Length: 67
Image (tube, rainbow, N blue to C red):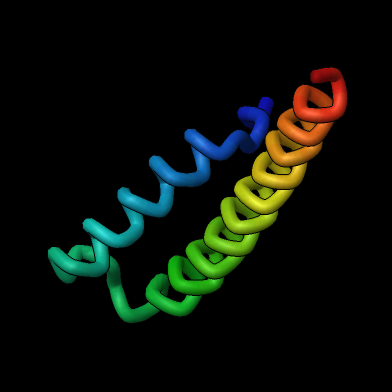
């Protein structure tokens, strides 16, 4: 059973991938796969942050309209 991808999980995995690459512990055979996964995780995190920003801005607008 796979764990649901959340921002925190994606960010943690990105940190692990970056550490593996920095420490050169990723074999050349797996490097492209790791970089591809990292790109997907970065895209996921960016989308999550944008959606959260939009939601927060909408809540603030609603609060301002209620004054």
